[in-house]
Image (cartoon, rainbow, N blue to C red):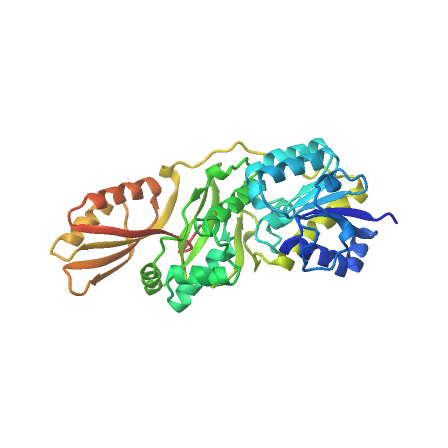
Amino acid sequence: MKAIHVGLLGLGTVGSGVVKIIEDHQDKLMHQVGCPVKVKKVLVKNIEKDRQVHISKEMLTTNVEDVINNPDIDVVIEVMGGVEETRDHLISALKAKKHVVTANKDLMAVYGTELLSIATENGCDLFYEASVAGGIPILRSLVDGLASDRITKMMGIVNGTTNFILTKMSKLGSAYDEVLKEAQDLGYAESDPTSDVEGLDAARKMAILARLGFSMHVDLEDVSVKGISSVTDDDISYSKRLGYTMKLIGIAQRENGKIEVAVEPTLLPETHPLAAVNDEFNAVYVYGEAVGETMFYGPGAGSLPTATAVVSDLVGVMKNMRLGVNGRSAVAPQFAKELKSPEHIYAQHFLRITAKDQVGAFSNITSLFSERGVSFEKILQLPIKNSNLAEIVIVTHKASHSDFEEILQRLNDLQVVEEVKSTYRVEGNGSI
């Protein structure tokens, strides 16, 4: 039986995990595809560096051409990261008739459509399960397991760093800066955490999920993004008093052919399943017209969970090689992209205001909401010690984004309002 040879671009945390799984699970892979799987060549920056896995120096190279243009290599696995240079490497690999597996969500969010098209033109597979939610098989489930259903909404926690931070802030009452430093010390957050804490990482993943789930060309710039860096312990404390847990949630929903894709700190009822997803774990809720609600939960990152998704994609490529159907799995988007306007995006909202504690102040505030037809579900009003101010916390019923933005603008202009301290989306209080 002819072995299938793999070339690796990168040998960091995930790349080491891929090598380990291929070596340790050789009997399982043999059973799945009927032939041996061998790592042939690995691109690294430094051949002399100590590795997490034992690998002979003869297999290592600093020249990418030794991998992507090696006639003996059947599949290129990209786990090096980066966007522009990596895109060029993968295009070269696909044009050299190499199948590609990648864990690179940044690349797929920006250039996924282009790369999938090039893969199809060259009769190659391009699989990218590991690019979203690490070891959770969410993309494969959308493409295969839920292929016959019509997805209406996907909502989930797709960034482990921010979930770790918000979990610690909620459970221990710790300040944001303090928990961020702990996340960096533990290796959950980068020294520059911007991509995670400002929601960019989650936005890239939601663009990929929306593209697959809704069969549309969804671009990164179509995702509305708000991060967690401005979340305070007071916000979390007040939300807990009202029965909510705060999470950075990615939301993609479709209604009447139009979609909304967003990432933002969101309040969930404490009884909601996503509210119980803590620390670095990820979870995605998928709503289908036929299947109803399904939830996918597991580790969102890490060497072996992510490597498991990569090697599962490798198995998919090898099965297609045996069947002679490589390059036929990518399906062109079925629908033209239509984004919802703010008038058609509805949600509940949490609002925290500092206002003058005087007669008529509250009625002035509530009249702005009633003029726009927005009613309240919950209200909390507390005097602030040693001042003539009061803290007012409101949870609205569903309102359009345009109405809510108009209310915020008018609140800021209201004399009795000292400051609009914070606003957050609220999800999961009833029907989707």
